[in-house]
Image 1: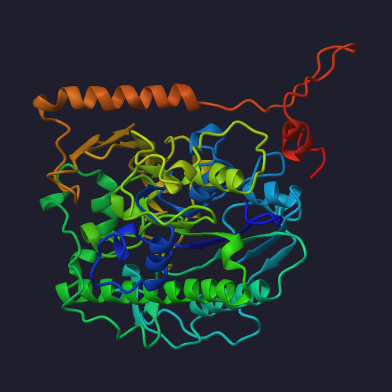
Image 2: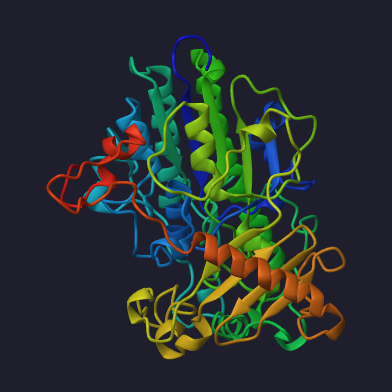
Length: 502
């Protein structure tokens, strides 16, 4: 800790920001000075992976330290409930003032009051404008490419309001230490941004999207099906570059808002006593593989590899960005250790502080992500949007052809990625020779040993993390008492029955 006051925490979470679209990752075109600066003053992790490629399950893992399969958090409508642990509630029960701005997609309504003091969202009364420029049936209607929008565009206004309110809170902090979750909606599609960000990037200079293999050979069926339903095959190369350029503009705008928060910390004197983390819940296709937005059960790096920059007081800056494999579930134990908070449940994260302190350069041998559902699990599907809705292309397939939305699990090392599917093709990629994951080599006989190693590691992971047992016992008899091996297990409401405190 710094001095006698406990460390504050500012957790800045963008929505759908890809790791490869940051300067510290190695992208020489995109402008992301504030996340790059945070990485330079602390640590920037180039290989941070989320545990699910869509928002709600990804954020649930971030807040709980659980993989999606541990407690059924693999759908868009299964958030952390009152009897389950969550990061915000830990800090609130430890005496922190918890400020939470922006979107949710993480904590069920029944647990919000127990998890924070301040809940900030909306635009602060500012008038919102903007809307889909395409009519239903237009060629670009389902591509999410909108282009230039007014400054009063809704998602952009919400982001600005949340960042401004976060900065004001930092400038006038409470007496107690604080934990802030500053959520942003950008760069989540539609790909839409106002000036000066719309014209910021030369369309000819942005990287051209990764092309899919011919006929989507070796890829799961859902990719080609959504590609066709979005009519992405009708987009010109110029329009694909436009998509990337607009997405980059959205990235730079959300990075600007991160800068607003960091500037408030430095100007108010809170910087030296605050742990600051900037990350995202998952990535985005942004034209790669001839697709837009994201997928629930595919695990291309553009979807699961996200920015993660962190500065912790007392830890010197790393000399260069880290290539250690880390997972988003590592965030909870990292913040808990930094702020001396005891966790009262079984989790599977590993603190990143040894990396930040320079004690090691490696962290995990493998990272994992999972998604999709059983064909019979109708309750796991998203809403069945009509064709007249921009989101029709992907979610409706879950009802029409549920097997293409089937369960899948990814294991990734630094050199290999293996995906096991229930109802479709498995995938294996040599990430050294094929970093864009275009050539599926799962059928190559010479790689049987690689497949066996990764499948064995996946099985061991499932055995180790297959469930979690709450720390609080149910007493079996009148004379029995509860062993208090952990003060935290007895103290935290989520360790009790759901009808208990909280």
